[in-house]
Length: 287
Image 1 (spheres, helix red, strand yellow):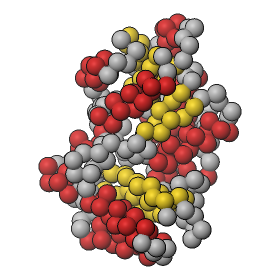
Image 2: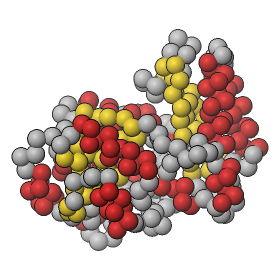
Image 3: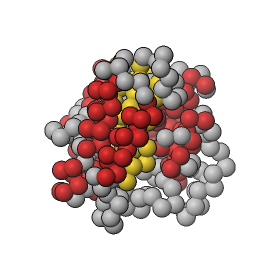
């Protein structure tokens, strides 16, 4: 396995490769990431995994400085998984206008309007940062296929839209959400949770599953289902960002005629100083 830090080295290593699979990550890898690597291996002859904590997608009060950097441990996991190349660029390598302290955002991707809803409503500019770094990585790696997890359903949707709108010759493959034994969605940010918070973190998934069960039984009072689930979590000590039932095809608010839905949620597990970790989850359902 090669560990590469510059675009020049990366392009030389990938020259004349028949089929390239790509998995972009921010590191601090877990079993969910490895599942995406395994998917990429099924669709390509060489697999590239990027590890880059992208400053453009973090807000002013978010955890950019404290986000775990675990490159050595990540590379060991990727080597065992059969990864061919790890691309771990610096901020200066990724952003040519980086002056050592600040990013002069002279050229960014404008995502579709859905980027301002759901997670985008509480994290303004987040998806512009995601779209920009992914577009840059696509240009650097030039993959045939790229694999993204379904856990961040909105991000997956926006990346698919970007590929379609810019006519990129890349197939986007969606990996199922990997879960811990408690049904908590695997996430790099789960490491922030205290033992007590981890024990109750599956309540978010349970709330979404409750909505799914109601939808399957024929309940189409979407607003009531969303409000009831949010109230239940808030009373249990969570700080709910949103609970939303959407069309899985358009990510627009669900309509009674929609049959393929996705129930999405984002919440902080509690509102005390030790519990400000924001978790997201979603469940797809056909009704």
